[in-house]
Length: 131
Image 1 (cartoon, one colour):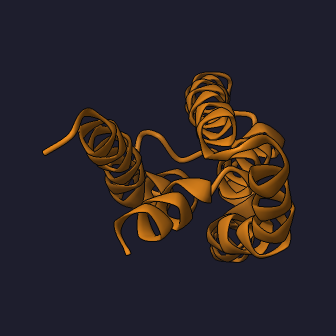
Image 2: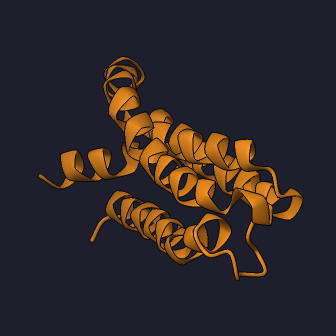
């Protein structure tokens, strides 16, 4: 297997690990009032599930609007620079997500998920490269 394909496999693997780590964490932050990591005050319990749904939906919505832009950038500048830019955006979004949990800042949770959704270009590049 050539070197470029291994780089793509590693990138996709890191992307999937990052998404897989967040799946069990997000409901504990907003959907489970008995969790020690619950970010809302007890008087805002009914708001938790609404925020949870909006937080989960913010990722695909950002992906929907950013994918055509990233595709155009890929056509103009090439796949590799856009892929590296996407990987950098993913790293930044995970740091913002961790910071948001530590500081209990809900707007930063949304910002991190939107940043992560806008850099959803990994799988598109991988599909385009393997077919």
